[in-house]
Image (cartoon, rainbow, N blue to C red; front, side):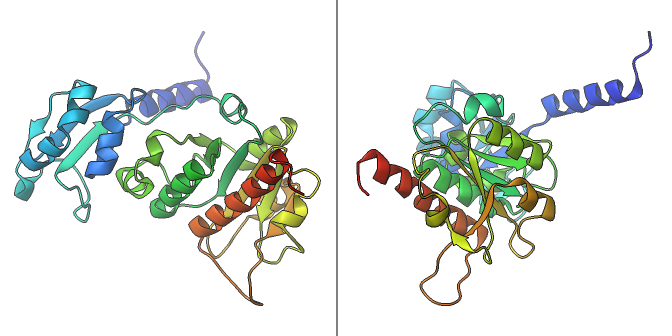
Length: 266
């Protein structure tokens, strides 16, 4: 029986995704990837100086590096990439199903990104998510920053440790989180209540924070899907943060709420 066209296309996309590779660059990003047993490492290109600095990580990874001249570095990187003499070809990380990643720690926190496409912002958000103990950062497969060398460098190693999941549909992911008991808060500068106010009485529960792209913010469908729109309180009458800073502040505010309950503070 001949397979339907949609099945053939789905299989083709799956095979293409399996063949996809990413070039990581920079000493920090390459070192952390070399030391990550979850990473499938394919090819390492280094200068002599970078090889010496990465010697321990290279030995741990068990990979044979290719020596290169810094003036004619052969890795296929963008011309503006600050590679510091090190580039590593890898396959994207597979963190598994969202349902298995987001649960498993007290008062879990999750960050969802609604069309945040700048890899530097996403990298910075991954760093904050790791610092504040978030279970995962979740974005869509399309209209979102993919796993790239620029994102990995901005994440400063967090990409290797902080789950970064890509889902087909953000509204469906929000619904799934709500079904798992998460309260889902969308950040909106004009919302009537702050994060702290919205979490009163449910501080120790599971919380997901949804952030939109700078400028357009959350899409209408996303606003409809969340449990409540909330704002970050500013000291003055007006304030604005870029999306990575807003994510850090929101995570801190939601995490502090949970810690106060856990420690018995009122």
